[in-house]
Length: 143
Image (cartoon, rainbow, N blue to C red; front, side, top):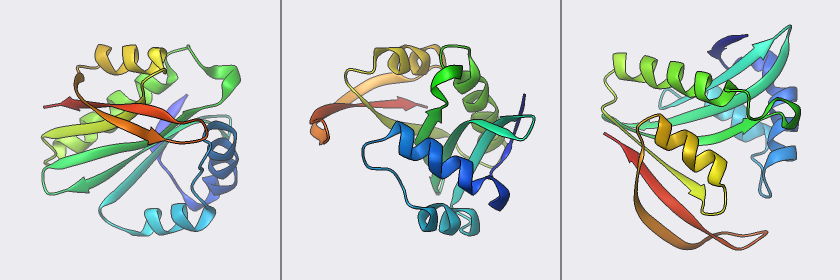
């Protein structure tokens, strides 16, 4: 498995993964725009030209918001997201990012545990942040 920056050739697979994972998926144009903007940085974990996972950063000065973390269902709970995020965070740090934040569904205990294993801490709650279904978001930071 390799972790690399998302490329245009990945968009079909990333959009399908996004649609299969989230109740409000990003559109293809959203990802096309993200690839072109300097404050976005999206990565994929791929093997044999198959995108297994994706995640992105939206950077602002020395902070970044982690977004769109998704793993193919058949590959979940294998450490792929952790590997992807470790590399993404390390590269962002070398580019001057000092703090990372994210929101995660309060009921997504597996993801919360993974983020905690990467050094993120719970710092807040956004009530009814998600819909389809309605759910609170846990706000996490790594500083």
